[in-house]
Image 1 (cartoon, rainbow, N blue to C red):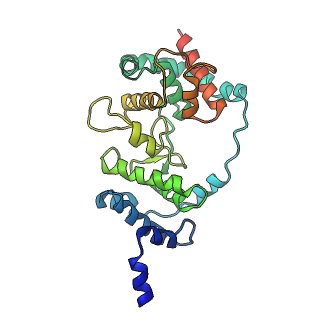
Image 2 (image 1 turned 60 degrees about the horizontal axis):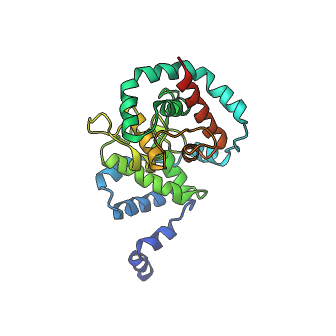
Image 3 (image 1 turned 90 degrees about the vertical axis):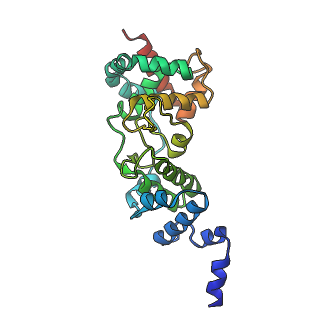
Length: 264
């Protein structure tokens, strides 16, 4: 009995070490994570609703471990991604013209750049992903490949629930935890999401003004310079590389935005 009592007296960090990532017991790890979330000030209601019934998703681990290195050239990738989206992108620029104008006044980011990102990420909100975000993040936090990174993202997903932006059921997206129409990680949502239409929620799942303004706020947060160019070699191209570390992807955003700016 003394040994058991001694374990209970250990600080939280020692208990965490006892239920490490990949320990073979996901439920024990999850119980430990819940205690850690509570210790960081996340409400019991958010923890209970967010993590109720969460189980390991082996398909997420399989996808994470089998990722291929991005190997397409700029010509291949941009040639596949931009042409089928140009007409719709031009239409979106017109449809949301007044909103995009107000966003540029506020954050300094032109609408063409925001619409290009929107189109490349989710086909303008059509394909946001179907993976339950909290389950995916819990799985990746439990798996040892990038445990600390995803542990932080899972905490932020619970903070999104706590402040009422989304319910856990609404939170669905890509297998690696990206959510919303421009695929924010939860940490970026917590830091950069804005309620641009003033309805009381930061809704990057369904609300285009919030989506576009939040994306602009993200780029501004990484140093976007108002009125400057975005093509490679220009002051704003490194900011696009903060959006996506792949130079091919960043160049494709820049090219798409430039083509939108020249479209009739």
